[in-house]
Amino acid sequence: DVKVTQSSRYLVKRTGEKVFLECVQDMDHENMFWYRQDPGLGLRLIYFSYDVKMKEKGDIPEGYSVSREKKERFSLILESASTNQTSMYLCASSWETDQPQHFGDGTRLSIL
Amino acid sequence: DAKTTQPPSMDCAEGRAANLPCNHSTISGNEYVYWYRQIHSQGPQYIIHGLKNNETNEMASLIITEDRKSSTLILPHATLRDTAVYYCIVRVGSPNFGNEKLTFGTGTRLTIIP
Image (cartoon, rainbow over all chains, first blue to last red; front, side, top):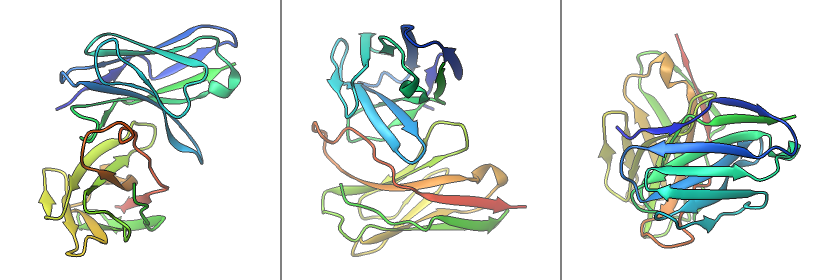
């Protein structure tokens, strides 16, 4: 079974802090994704990566950056956290961009 | 990607088969039908996908009509742990930029009744 592990299930941070969300997958997948999920807005793609050190912007990259130094690990960085970044953050991975994406359990991030 | 239409909610008795319908009347020839589900407070879980033939795996069966305009996800023996929101989506079946993101609609909230 594919395993996508996100470092925290719940996280509380303060406005202006730099926040790191970590994601690790164990299936040697090429592609990794970061989404956020908000009530009434569904899933929104923040960034994705199709290879080590490669990244592409999704629909809502503002205020975020990513890092992929190793194939299995994809990090999401909130440069200066703001209250409107309070959300459920979901990491996913897949073999190819048209193949099923497998998700972690999510990190529920609260910015106070 | 083609839009899909699902009923907002359904109930099913525990142990019975749960049949979840999805309409995708504008599906294109190169688009696959995917099903995911999301149990409360967890990440989405991939269930199954198919192009035109019926598919079965350890979780579910997918029945796609011959004209491909609708499909049904079947959970053969529903348990309480199958209570979740089920999402039907269609996606182009080739790897190319612009195809990478998943877009979920509102889905069907399936409740398994003891």
